[in-house]
Every structure is written in structure tokens, then in C-alpha cells.
Image (tube, rainbow, N blue to C red):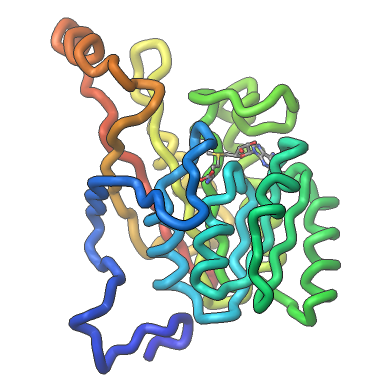
Length: 261
Ligand SMILES: C[S@@+](CC[C@H](N)C(=O)[O-])C[C@H]1O[C@@H](n2cnc3c(N)ncnc32)[C@H](O)[C@@H]1O
């Protein structure tokens, strides 16, 4: 058994863990606590697969961009502990009130994940629970300015330029490495964007930032993107515009998996 998960290799044929680099997810999992209330959330299958693949029961999962709490609800279901941060006030209480686990801890902080101060608080939480590290980090940052999440100037969706976005993103990763256990994993879920008629490969720039921090790229997973609310009922107009121009319509996003060696 790999030492970073609970996969039962004796029963590998029945494992629910996906090992291909292409994830076609037909439908969002709407079971359990996943109410899909949060615009800009990811499908629960993403954190589920990452948690099953890269953690053991009672490990600690860290999410510096909790949004609607998808990662937390999956962590709870899979008996993992979770620490999460979001810059939007109000979100953390809302999510925490839905957590009912008695066996694992869930600590949520309203704050800026690019700030070292936030990580001082996280260190305190870890100490309180007699832990030194988290074992998996799942980062689902804003895809630059595609969706504006808040008015906060430190919100990554309010970055004033690509450079500003990448600087802030890099700070979040750097901070995360202060709490991530060595030989464990950090995953980033990100999509690309168009600006002024150009494809801006955010995934490529984020890979570059992470490699600059010494992280080892293990996999690039491509996931289909369907039924994006922003595009809902607009499929026809997008297709017409694409045919009338020279670009393709986004139908995929990326899950980047790095090891902290
Ligand atoms: C793409 S959403 C995450 C969605 C989440 N994975 C889910 O399934 O609901 C990005 C989140 O990052 C938060 N955010 C943006 N900048 C931040 C920062 N500097 N520190 C902490 N959270 C931030 C936003 O408020 C937003 O909720």
C-alpha cells in the first residue's frame, strides 16, 4: 500500500480511484451536503478523487480557497480533518454550521491566504490538534478575473494584472509549503482564460510559479467543463461567435498535481 493513502492494492480491480489523466465527469455529485449554492465551485468528484488518492484517514486536508466548502464536505465524508481559508466574511460560519463530524476537526479562517499572518493562525490550530503539518493541499483559486468573488483588494479575482495574480498565487503556495508535510502533495485546479482575443494559459503560468518554488510536477489532468452557469443557455451564441472567428470554446480545465519533495 502506498504510504500516503489507504488504497487496498489487494483489491485494486475494485478501486474507485481514477488513474487516467482525462476526467470526463458527466454529472456533478449532488448527494450529501453538496447544495451547489456557490457560483464558481468545483464538482465534489475532484476533491474526492484527490483526497482518496493522496491522503489516509485522519490526515489533514488544507484548502486556502474554500468558497462553498466542497472540499470540506468531501473531507468530512471521508473521515479526514480539514483546515480552510476564504477571504469572504460570512462564508466560513455558513460552512462550519453544516459540519457535524464528531471524529475529525474542521477549522475555518476568514482571511487572506497570501498573508503570513493567516498561516500563524493555522499553525496555532495545528498545535491545538497536536499536529505539525497538513498532508494534502487542494487549491482552487479564482481563474484570475473570470468571476469576481468579492470587493476585497487581496482577493485574487481582483488582481490588477496577470503578474499581480501570479505574485499573489505564488505567495499562497509559498505559505502552504510552510505547513505541508514533506513527500506529500499539493493540487491546483485552474482554467485558462481569454483576454483581448488571446488565450491566456493560466495553467501554464501557475505550473511555472510552482516549479520556481521547487515543487515536482507529477500529473496534469484535463477535466471536462460542462453546464458552466455563466454559459448556460448561451451555447448557441458561443458556437456562432467561434465559427465567425478563429478560437475554440473552453470545454476543459486542469488539475495540476505536485509533490513537495
Ligand atoms: C474558485 S473559488 C473556490 C470554490 C470552491 N473550491 C468550491 O468548490 O466552492 C475561489 C475562492 O477563493 C476565495 N479567495 C480569493 N482570493 C483569496 C485570498 N487571497 N485568500 C483567501 N481566499 C481567497 C474567493 O472568495 C472564492 O471563494
